[in-house]
Figure 1: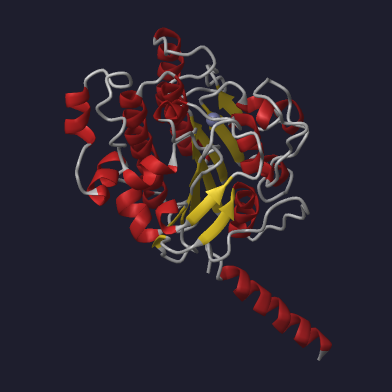
Figure 2: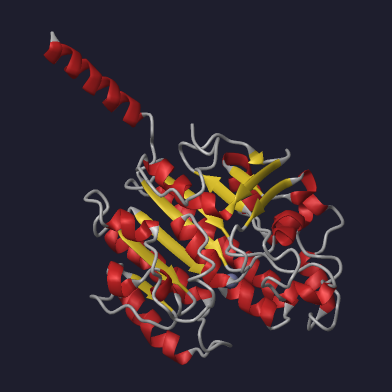
Length: 358
Ligand SMILES: [Zn+2]
């Protein structure tokens, strides 16, 4: 009798687990993309300002529409078609739906640490310097579990990412900055390796996202990782450079990259209907005075305001969440673990987002 009960209990547990469809999680970030553009499209204050836009007429013809809903869909069509109709979007403050950093730095490394560990560490993560993260990210933690060992990978445009995920300690495969693909490169990877050295991007510590994206896509096809992190960077760097036109164009291109990732997921037997994608940003940017759109950091009001999107087989369709609410950046790590049905015992981490999964 006792054996029978244990048997039935085991079956129940198995059935319960099978209700959870997610087996893979992709985390995607766009560095410093404001909620103002995600939810409102091109900013009327900036789109025709010759200080920030080389050809205001061209930019207006590309991105302006009087209707806000149309305007934001022009800027990020994948978010405002597939994600809004199949997933969840948090952080539109027009509806008093807020997402904020809990770190009090409001710049990149503290934001990525908070996303990937679930907690702020303002004492130790206090600069963007290349210092190995003393905290274990969920990427490292998952890679230590048998189910995910060797099935975790990260790609970033910024050359600090190997330190954020502490490659020296974690041994995670990460390709960031101007690194090339060395292990048995495919034809495409060999070509990327070659042209990455030939196309000189505008920045010394951040490569253009085209390389990050296609290295990630190739890896995905080759190794089928269960956990993939892709960190796009252009939006932040063009904003720092004061180029609103390039900032918008990068947002649109990154939206297209995310669509490509998702289309691959949904067309591939290994990933289809078994993959959850969580998309976010490391920090916001300023609002007033208007020149502050370029900047972030603690002295910049509004730069701690962020957004989160979730899409996947276990995620109830809520679309754009238009009710009062408050989420934090420190909830993303446990949300990822929750999607996988994995335990994450870290008292400092924020709770998983309630309602993100059935
Ligand atoms: Zn950043």
